[in-house]
Image (cartoon, rainbow, N blue to C red; front, side, top):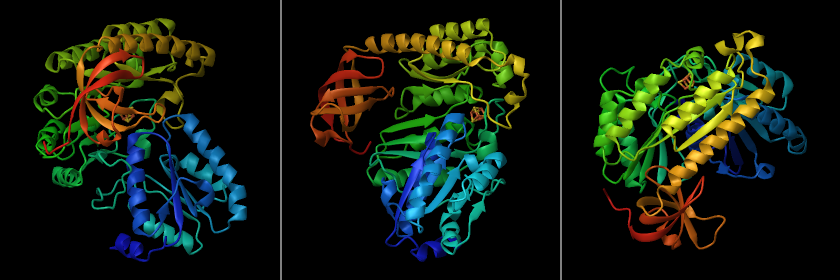
Amino acid sequence: MLVAQSMATRLGEGRKAQIITFGCQMNERDAETMRGLLVHMGYTMTDRTDEADLILFNTCSVRENPERKVYGRVGLLKELKAKKPWLKIGICGCMPQQRAERQRIAETLPHVDLVFGTMNIHQLPELLQRVEAGERVIEVWHEEGDVVEGLPVQRLNPFKAFVTVIYGCNEHCTYCIVPTTRGRERSRRPEAILAEIRELAAQGYREVTLLGQTVDAYGNDLGDVDFAGLLYQVNRVRGIGRIRFTTSHPKHITPRLIRALAENEKVCEHLHLPVQAGSNRTLKRMGRQYTREQYLELVARIREAVPGIAITTDLIVGFPGETEEDFQETLRLVEEVRFDGAFTFIYSPRIGTPATRFPMEQWVPEDVAKDRIYRLIDLQNRITLERNQALVGQEMEVLVEEESPKEPGKLVGRTRTNKIVVFPGDPSLVGQFAWVTVTGAQTFTLEGVLTHSRVAAAV
Ligand code: SF4
């Protein structure tokens, strides 16, 4: 097999590689595969740009800002490359999937040696071999091939793992570039997913996060399994104590899936359910395929089936055509749902997406959009704080993640509802489940005291 042969050449022996990742968990998971491939080729991974012989920028296209950062940071490397002519620089991920960005990279960043897309990751060893032979390689596939299984992975976290279950997205949200950069939906076979999770459990992993742009659409292209069915199967894997998943599209949350959330004890009580806007007019223009009323009803059904579930969301303000009244509806929806948290964004036009074709006079001026996002953040922060304060006095299961980088003697963990808790404790608890009583609450963290801990044994 080509990948194996290329890796066998140990091209990276004695060389150091750095991967700089922007964007979502899918990109982080891709970086883990690239790291795995590079380590198999003999590279040593580094966080230091000045000592790297290979630097890969794993890019994101969802908003303009991360793209700008990539151009800025890669531009600065020109000097380093002049001093270290053997340095190889690559750009991968979502940016090169767009023709315009690919051209811009090729023309304006001549010191970039390698450009590849989200569907070419498995070819990395072969592409690097061509680069080392002196070729400037630009290789971006647009046709989704079969899902490639069995690639080496190097994970950074020793007890929490991302597991991609579905690639791509079939939706047509008018602001979103993802269907262009990630292609159509392709689900992995459940046997492959379960084999990976069993292996993770055997290695001591305690929590898995099932990943997909529309994770709840899992299986629609397979026909013999759906996401609810997958949750039931993953729930049976011994050793794994917690199952999370992201990101869900409201239209794929079926009654069967809600039942699966309620019935599978390892599935955590947290659902990230992007609503994006609270006005039906805006939702329609965004192509979201649900109404405000349907979303609210869905939230009510989920909360009825899974009491205490935390619901978080994504919200966009300043979408073309959004009036103050539309925005007020978003605020009212946020008040009504009382999300546990929200990622809030100002609309960022992406070349090639349908939303950029709305007439210019409908575009929301920057100062108006900024004013709206500040009001939205103020409201959501108030609600998040109130919801957190309501937890004071409760005892919660926490997976201890690390020693606090800011407060010596304290540990940081997450509840099943995905809340961050800081509490005094012994570093030996990192990687284990503990019971913590919440003693205080802020907007982004809870404080607590350890009640008791249990070793993360097989469950
Ligand atoms: S569901 Fe919509 S927002 Fe999410 S990745 Fe697909 S097109 Fe983009």
